[in-house]
Length: 193
Image (cartoon, rainbow, N blue to C red; front, side, top):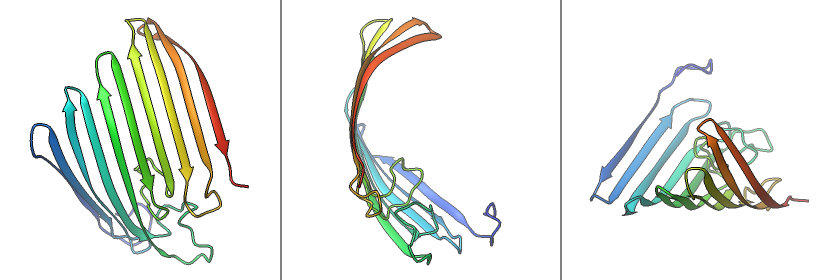
């Protein structure tokens, strides 16, 4: 790897998944960046359980190790400017259904303040729970609803900030290329003073 203009170094990893039964699969992943300036490791385990024809329960646990130069987020920058070793953990659980008429997702995720993985979709120190669903009434009308709650526990300037949001709406499909969406949204937000 030499994209960053520094010393040559190795980047590699492995990702494996095994089906234990027709309805249970487990997996593990490991990746390492041997960049001398910002070495980084991420490893984790995951599982997927098929509960029904189109219903799944998914769980993931991950851990990262690196230094504060890796992703330059507020939660990993050192006030002294000195690179510090950072280790963090994250977890996610999700119940998902992908039916013909009803599609739904309920999830909870939490990342520790030292967790550094820009591909995880979860910032360091963030806690998030949510639910999303849609119901196809017929070929034209679809009902949609979503709820989300996030909280910052990063131990930085934004520590304690939180947001709760909910929305509901209807989609109207006029043609395959023309769709109208109408809805309402309510958001409560608390920022740190």
